[in-house]
Image (cartoon, rainbow, N blue to C red; front, side, top):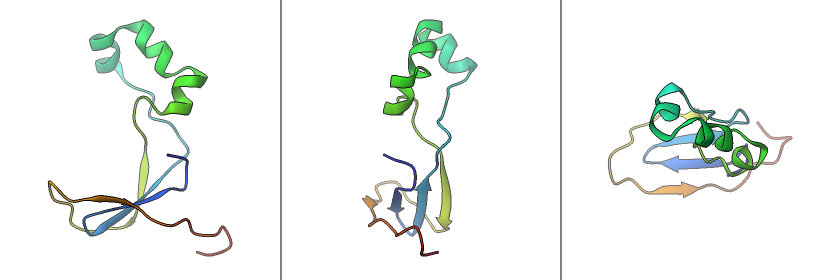
Length: 79
């Protein structure tokens, strides 16, 4: 999902942010340094193979089983 994508999860809304999730020592220990290099390569980052980071746009309750819905894009000039 590209940065700026908004997702509704339960009552909450989150927005995908630009900084990629780059992994950690646990990932490297489990999958190896080659896997860590690959997920942090330009191709791996573009695919967000390590997941994504997001900011909370609207706080709310999220429960197991809640649907995740992609929300329509908001034009840049709107808050």
